Length: 341
Image (cartoon, rainbow, N blue to C red; front, top):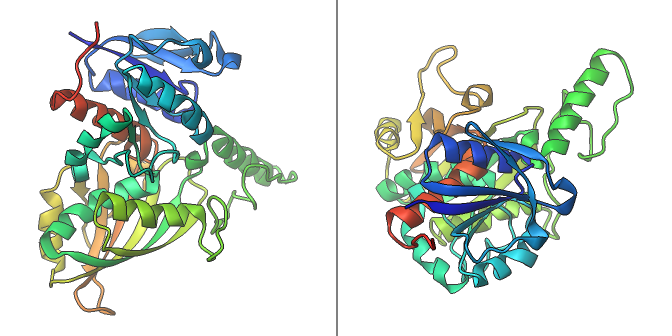
């Protein structure tokens, strides 16, 4: 028996990616419903070889739906997720609305799948920030092997992390530069074409941005509250794929060769690490792929028991859509939910 799945925010970047991944992975569905705001009623989206017409979230009855994959932003999730959960439908939310709620599990299946049982308190499961998701997939096996004490990470985040508007702005600005037209910045605080912006989300009182704070708080909740982490998050002129330069300090010694072996055996990771031209991964090559790629593994001699590495992943997939679908698969595989119909 298959499940009835609703995708909220089906017309957005992540929503469309979720529909593609559900079809690619042959998720056990009897019915998929595409939901969006009332202004998108009738908008067509694809699910495998089918075309779905969007229905309005405001008027949808979730009482016969098993799983809701929510990708409509924090404000929408705060309003609707508790209502949906109260109707017996499990919400897997991609926004930041529920990540820091102690009664809502924050899940990356390769890292802390066992924590998923806590969803029964509110019928809500949170998906982490896109930059956090790939980072903890890389850190988990290393933490198990040598125990991480401190992490310093600098991110190079693509414009798709800011939604369709971010991608449109990079495209339009790039075109304007080539034809010597004026460059307008609407989505980003400064020009993004042929530039980098060390500012993602709002600034906080301590000088960090909210994006940087998310990485710190979420890594602690998902992996280990004792890990110290500092982040600098940068928007770069790349359409899809987040990259991270990571320096890690361990409690016990670990060599680069040991790290490569540990990472190669870990779920969700592919190690591409040749000391030659092109022997590493870039966001362009990671786009459309499910894996988190690790390259440039080397000793960090500035600290005791230190390593440095390069981490790349498709932020729309592992950072959002794929992780949400994997969470739903954990619910089913562990028999934590059953189909209503």
